[in-house]
Length: 229
Image (tube, rainbow, N blue to C red; front, side, top):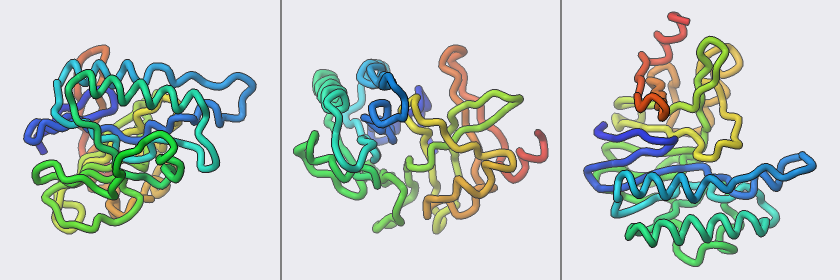
C-alpha cells in the first residue's frame, strides 16, 4: 500500500487524499475531571498536515464528535476551526460517519456517508462492514497503540489481503486524549478486534511514526512480533 504516515494520519498519494479518524471532539469536556482537557491542538495539527501534503481532499473517517447527548461549545468551535483550516488550504472536506457521530448535524451541514471512495481505496470508520468491495480499506475506530518496553506508542495496523482479499489499514486515534488499546500483550490481545474488518489481528503489522525523529518503523505481523517481546 503506497501511503505516507504522519502524525496519526495518512496521505494517499494516488488520490491525493489525507485521512484521519477519531477526533472525538468534546471528549475533554466529557471527561470526569474538574478542569476540561484541552483539544486546541487539533486544528493546528490538521493545518500542518495540509501544509505538508497539500491534499486535494481531507477525509475525517468517523467519530468526529465524542458525546451522544450534546455538543459542547468548545467542540463546535474546534470543528469550525478545522473546517476553516481545510478550506483555507484549498482542500475539499469529506466526513464519513462513525458510531459516535449521532450529533454531527449540529456542526456539519454537509453529507456524512458511510464510506468514501478515493481511487481504489474505500475510507470508512470501521465499526460496520463495508457495503462495497475495494482493493484496500482505510479505517479508524479501534484506537490501536503498541507497548514497547513500558512505553506506549499510537500505531497504525497494516494488513495485506486480510479482508476478503483486500488490504486494510487501521489508523490510530487522531486525538491525543484517547488512551488507545494495546495490540500486543495479554490485555490488548482480542480486545482490539471490534471492527469487522479486523478478523485476525495476528496478520496485521504495527507501524509506528516517530515525528521527532522523522522516522517510520514497521514491525513484523503481530503473530510473530509478540514472540520477540
